Image (cartoon, rainbow, N blue to C red; front, side, top):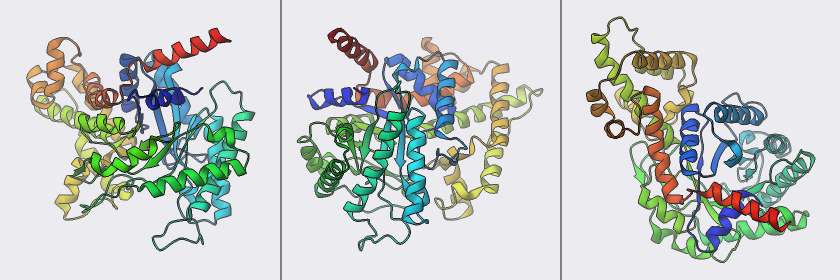
Length: 451
């Protein structure tokens, strides 16, 4: 049985456990996630999205096999045992090719699904909800649920066939269905009302997918469908976080309790409080996806280090300034594609959003060569000198306290990782994921004894 199925089985038996999904390709974020999972002795779910990683390279330049290789190399570098690692693919389907005909887009989607499963990704979000060229839609621009279910089954059949033809050194894939999600990257303006998925929508999705899977001989695969993606009413805009309100999702909570194998997957849970995240898991939103909040913490840490560097340079004139903040701004201005549709207003308002927006579009610019060079210079400068604790206290007070307590080294990279881990820790506590790796290992041992 897949570790996710085991975890959800525990949840459905009354233990309010869940798992958080790290949706990022940033090496600092992934390293911090591995350190946190190591500390917690927990499963670690890392996901790539369909626009980020695909058979052509996506915007990261990585194919699924490349993403897996990068993750395993990071695990080896950080002495992380990958036996607890689960790789997932998010929004896999024809969504990257909506301007193409349905036939062509679905061909690409099949190739994408096959590439992910062949590479060993075992959590597969089947997403065929986006209309393709010349598709008939309703007045709201949505596809008929029958079309979505049929395309979902077609993609699942490819995943199953690819798995059967693989070396099968990993469990058969588990599937996530549905895609009623917040706006990718966060809302672009203040919203008056946050949509919450209706029970009727969820029921239709489940029933049509189940029936279509059965009609296509995919009964065994349907038994591994473990979650439905819904919108529980969480969202964030540039400067606003819309918090989860349990009473608005009460009907969803009650409905899923009648489905013994299913929980909900919640997207864009970034910036929700620890208390709210815990309540979401109790309400059966047991898979919590997080991404921008992690790179936002990364950005906060790097900015704090840049502010420290600025104060220290007059005292250490031999050091070459990193100019990291200036380099970021210049790179974003010269390459506006990743933020232009998300930030508006005056020049000053745009500049502020580039730096401090919760949508954190700055995350797309860390891999740029000039930014990487400036970041390396920043870390080199601060590693060559001992950062005065007074500066750490000023700009990173939580890390200062940990240094004083002897649980954190006064090193710039350690400061960055701790900042990211402070977010991950909230998710670990909310999902009670600690010791889940030990649990699954014990269950595997028991299964072997029975055999």
